[in-house]
Amino acid sequence: MEAISLIVRSIFVDNMIFAYFLGMCSFLAVSKDVKTAMGLGIAVTFVLVITLPINYLLENYVLKAGALAWLGDDFANVDLSVFSLLIFIAIIASFTQIVEMVIERFSPALYSSLGIFLPLIAVNCAILGGSLFMQQREFSNIGMATAYGFGSGIGWLLAIVGMAAIREKLEYSNVPKPLKGLGITFIITALMALGFMSFAGIDM
Amino acid sequence: MALLSSKTKAALLGPLNKNNPVIVQVLGICSALAVTSKLEPAIVMAISVTLVVAFANVIISLLRNTIPNRIRIIVQLVVVATLVTIVSEVLKAFAYDVNKQLSVFVGLIVTNCILMGRLEAFALGNGPWPSFLDGIGNGLGYGWILIVVGFFRELLGSGTLMGHQVIPQAFYDAGYQDNGLMMLAPMAILLVACIIWVHRTVNKELQEETN
Image (cartoon, rainbow over all chains, first blue to last red; front, side):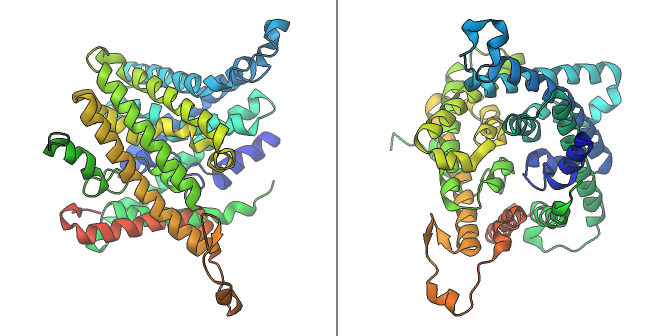
């Protein structure tokens, strides 16, 4: 129950894009058509669901102050949290590399349609952001961390697919010249974010 | 002037205007929006990013002939993550309150697209000195957007600047109210849209053809 509530909250209330603006770069760059947006959204969700539990284990059994106590009393006072950033980004980057190779091997079509954006998942702020928020919120067990990763990923996917759908329709509208392209995309994002704020009161 | 040839001058000054990382190259939006509800964290963030970009550029530029092409992204991430860890520890030691306000966004400098973008596009092909200037230029180009957004959000949203009240009490007595909407996240993105609007009205060659 707690996990479901967490998933719903992270999809709607704490949406990665609309509440924290994480992963905006690829959000703005890849939201031109729905199909590619969908592919990237799924890839991001996938990477989030895998890397969050791994980073959760590392955080709680290696990095946190006192986390190494299971190695023996000598290690009870070791605090490696300074390295968390390095470790997290290394996990994310290497995992992205694996996902890239797997997709290339088993689905060349998806691979070629995602193109450059696949390796860019490694520097997608939403992924590292997920790990850092996980660290900050101190989830009680690994299941909650996974649920958080899943919810954040789905929230990101919803946002980018919605944006892509709106932008496809935007082809036919008459936008003031200086606002064309980037400007209008920003304004739409802001309006969507305002819309998503109405979910803030949800309590399960 | 020998110190700044025209090329290095372009590397330093271009990003401030025509080649701005945030509003033209669309890099580093994520953190630009989340830390700007007050002026102070915006300034701290601007300085941190400038330092990290400049020094990451120098280091990668020095290493550029020894890094194997295949693993360059990991090398870049390690260099950047190390620099960010240093910045984050310094902030924790000397500006703890601001560090609290910035929360995860200091760590997220690692994935700030400006860094990867500049390292890939500039530092891998240029010497240390131009790379340093390019880093400073891009950091400042990013910084002034942050500071403008932070200025308006704090001024209109809470009537203060850097925590000092600037809107006179007489205004409030006459019925003026702070615009709470400015404190909400979406307004940051609207403000950036307004900056883009003004910037592209002035620089017509940057306007795009399609929506």
